[in-house]
Image 1 (cartoon, helix red, strand yellow):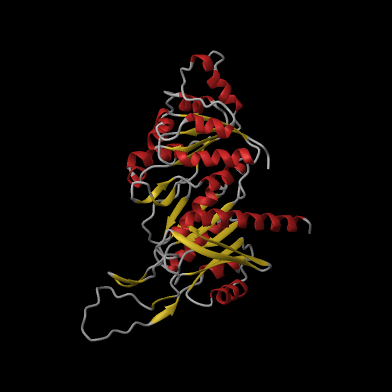
Image 2 (spheres, helix red, strand yellow):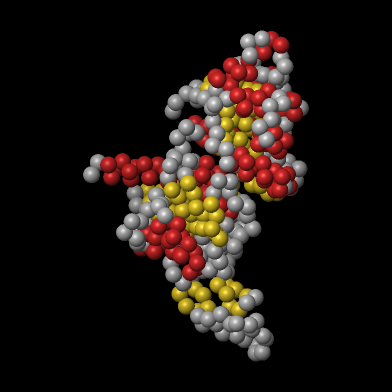
Length: 404
């Protein structure tokens, strides 16, 4: 791992205390770290804390006569190999997106040529606010800026939702691989969410999939350097930053859109979508009225998107998901072999608090020569580990192909 010069910007927010652990991890691995704090950050953590952990003076003011006698902010801007803002408050994100330079940290971001990674941290309502999202869109379009997160889950204010800063260990992994992510330059297609198979204009067959795991994987793949297309069934989740989302409703549409995305060029296909196995053989033109005590539906088999992609002559590295309620390993290994997959990720959706509609999960990844258990943990953290693991297997496959 190459040693880097990391300029860590800390802005105002309760997550600032986690940044101290990030500095400790970076220093332990041999990275050089210098910290710049905003005035808001000083209300949560003292500069002395970061000075003790980094072994370097902490800068807090643009108008520090001693530091600026030698144009200190320019020197810092040139010194950094990587700028990381963690936590990045809604206020800082707004100022960065507009190109402002009204304090030391925003000035450094304007002056540096180093890549800038932004780890948002704020209340879920602030994150979802349309003005914040407009600023996020501006940063996502900036080639110098990468967005890391945010995570979802419980927040200090008691709310639950997106806005949590990624954990220090996750940020450390991202920083360590920031110059060359495990999927850098790869084209990735991911399916997510449920499908809905119509019975009549108001009713349909579906399942409990929330899409959270697939969306977390899409975000993790994007942060790992991939170009990502997410083919998504109906969900109530915002599109991950930097990811192209193509919405579908039925299993037949899922196959059509996923195949089309793979046709455009694909190195990795991850099928997390919970595609309905069956659909009604016909859809009534009008709402079916209650006339008898019972009603029978005739069902027909839906196309298997995962099997279809894996069976292609130009099949990408293909990863499937298996949500089971019993004999998880048996069914997962059978699916791995029967569908000729490179990897399958299995989980027990009957486990309380994990799987469908939860922010947490516990999975086991299986491949022909091994396995790895991951979690229980947040779906975001699991997605980060899965993408790293898949990246390792992609590299191994590429290396093996190169020796033929």
